[in-house]
Image (cartoon, rainbow, N blue to C red):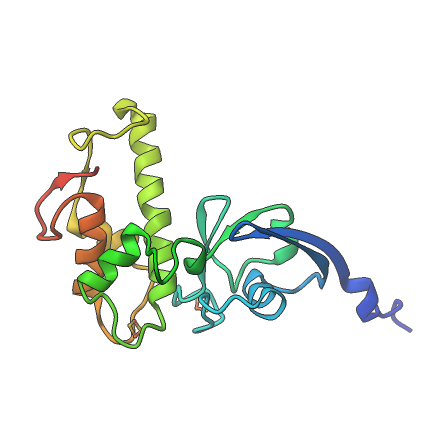
Length: 190
Ligand code: FES
Ligand code: FES
């Protein structure tokens, strides 16, 4: 006879998350993803399940400031983390700069991928700024110390698919926030 089969109860682990500023604590099956936790336990509606295999980016959220694909991230591994989703970045009345840029540039059609695109773009811009700060550009970027090309934006955002093909406008929206029109020319990151 094989070893004792684990009961469902034995798979349960305590997990604590802060989601968009609100603390949540509970017990989860250790195999539960961050995405399923957000959707089923916290009522988050922005993070979307597209492929559930880490391939489309629709579920992208920020965990401690870094972008993750929430469908592949185990909630238990993010115990104690601060999670930010698209609805945590702005409200309908007060959109974030990036959200406003997406609206202004028509960076969406059906909108299914948009929360993930926005979270990914926020994370990407933070990564670029951190890298530049590390390289000695200074923690406060002044708009003259770094370059981010349209091609680089597209490369950095390549994990986020858009079935509607709104890529041109998505890149333009991100480019605007990065401090330039996404024309393919190098401009300064602000
Ligand atoms: S749903 Fe997570 S990457 Fe597609
Ligand atoms: S806007 Fe429809 S999938 Fe991107």
